[in-house]
Image 1 (cartoon, rainbow, N blue to C red):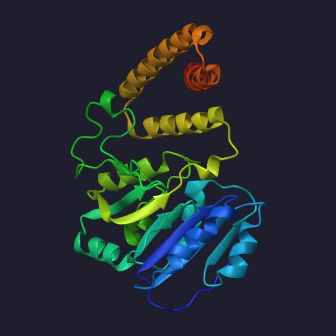
Image 2 (image 1 turned 90 degrees about the vertical axis):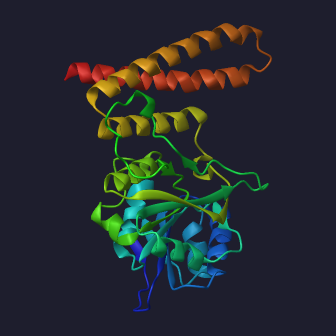
Length: 304
């Protein structure tokens, strides 16, 4: 790991951490929106996961106050965030995707909310698309929760998780629980972090007064749809095996198998009559990926 870190003794209320992978065309606007807000003591980290598009040079040449951590390989979202977390000095940590931009706002309002609600360990913000339409920024349930029985009883608050593209958390709490779980390479780490924080007795909050424009899925622009679904499905099963009882996982497996088999059969039946075969084939690829992952997991378990 190479680094470009400038440290001082100034008081820091907020540490902003951005993980970047080949986002040269996006990260400038993201950083511009951050540096334009000067209402609190803050520091900004960019962890670059071995970009090859000149992202690092852009940051070094135009944003001298930004602390840069340069990885020689793509370490994934969770591990990269943890790298900066270990170096950060802020009372609160704000995790932000490079494909997001702040609308004119104040960090101090966000910090004040966290100061006044110590029972909230982590909070998400309102996210919108580039055209101003709202994005789904939070969830009231976890993946597979409908199949659980006792695993999620007694958790505080009504929100299950918030989207990891933009969220603020208590720094001391994050360090206490070890930051992100690095078993998650990409996807699922935000839901896992939120659940672990709730298991510590805290609530997940939502700041609807703080708005971020989020372009979504820009880090996966070079991935096929099947590759994205593979990553998402693998992340879900890591989540299940970490937080759910064996009987619950078996129910989830059965539900997935039934759903995927039914969808594959119906899509294959529709294919000859469809005017949009590309869309049908894309959906077939998605469900085939899910089916293959489940079958491999079952075979691996049987082998043990």
